[in-house]
Length: 159
Image (cartoon, rainbow, N blue to C red; front, side, top):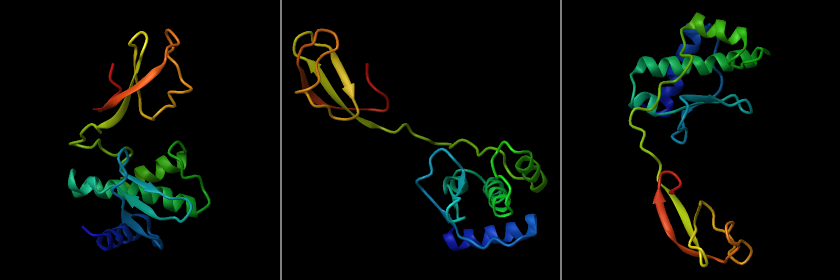
């Protein structure tokens, strides 16, 4: 499905389920990782996670679109479109939108780069995501000098 097809689908769902026109842009955003979609308050556009279509069925995609359209229509009508409000929950139930997006099916752990520093005195290891200045930082155990060793690839901080 392309962004244009998504745009037409969102406009159709808005007319049929809410009885109002959707006058802004709807697009896929592949950078969304933990959410099904996002309504942007600044420009009133809706972004949808493309994995809602590739990993799940079209009914899930429609449910996520209805969820984001609830935010959209409540915000434009001057009401709060936050999840906790009664108006949001009532409208979401009325149109049959999804309260929560399903978890991604095949989410692989993201491999990160960790800098390994070793104390030259006591051999204590320190893993850091960012580089540190070894001229300023010292070992927390013995106050010895730190030396950069190598980059370690791991999903979480090694021990």
